[in-house]
Image (cartoon, rainbow, N blue to C red; front, side):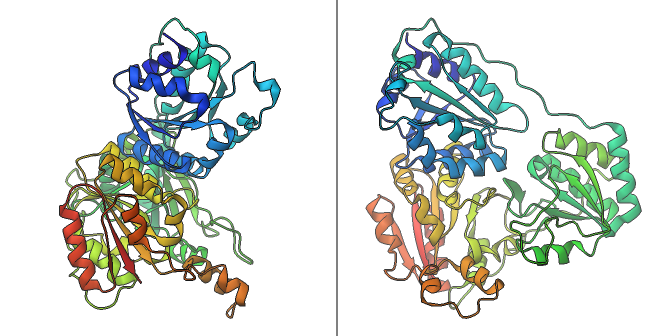
Length: 515
């Protein structure tokens, strides 16, 4: 047995079942080990950002880590943007990076780089393997570090000679830390705040507060006290739709977020950090908690959110039977031209029960969240870290984690081009993903930001840097070229017909919406 086989056997023993891989020369022993060890699915991504984004989506839905396999520093660097998103989502995942043989590092070959420096900004745990004998123990530690609450990115850098050299055997799984528990005093303080301020209070939800039992408890609390439930602008995962308590998203632009929260005198943080603006704007604060608003923390992301919310509901005497849940109320099928309103309504009108929606639709997707409040129960995933190009890969991982659920990739055209290679993986793996491309042939969000900056009449260069129209990107051709059936629509009626068809078929589909 060699180091590579030990690594894979150790991972399988710890419950890791999937490796999203884009390997190179230094990882050939590990590629062979994936063949030689049962229990690990190998999924090829044609770009490392697809692998890291897929591992994020997998972790969000499976609640356990997958491996990513990338080649040296440059290969890993290609995946960093989606590791930033995974870190913000607090997704557990383990990066395996092949490095030069230990005795070859000093030669400073062309692909040699400082991988540790690349890994640290997006990793909670980083280690360089020193010998084949330590690779199993190092792997077990990497997996345990990733699974420690609330979920972390671990990175293990493995020289090629440590992979091919003989080693004694795999390591046993290591214990994982449990979430922190809140004290009774913290629960009582939060209860006192909600009793005092009632409908002038907001409960701001993040992380595991948006899972089924936690959300049910939050709904009971809102029913009892009259507080408003608001979630992070880009939640890592939220259970929504009929039968779930209604939750609003904090608006993206700081002026709108401040306006929403200015109506309230207290905010209770439940699994979320205090809200801040995405960017610094002139004459606007970084913090989105209005001046004079009381802020009380019930739980941080590191805590056992479900237990804390249920304890708070009990402290408040909130009824077990929550009567405040959303009733099913789909919008009618839209007609007419395609725009953000009709696209959102079409998806909300037709999305199937228990589907997963990965939303990176940017400006076109804004009305969908409200339109789908009364849709059938579904899981909603979003762009947690703001690094675009997460949507298609995240949908990939979600489909691998949940093969029996329909996944809808609600995708803007500009950000979709960052990781368009994910479509090839959808086809290769036969993933149950329907992709809706919002093709408005521009970076609309940048045009909005130009206006917000006071540039109402941008010049030729500014217009060219926000336009995708010259030449136009042919999404149906791109999809078909990577093995995904695709159609193009330009009316709401056509969208409804094609979406209804695609959602009843197994395997991948793409619908290009000309907006």
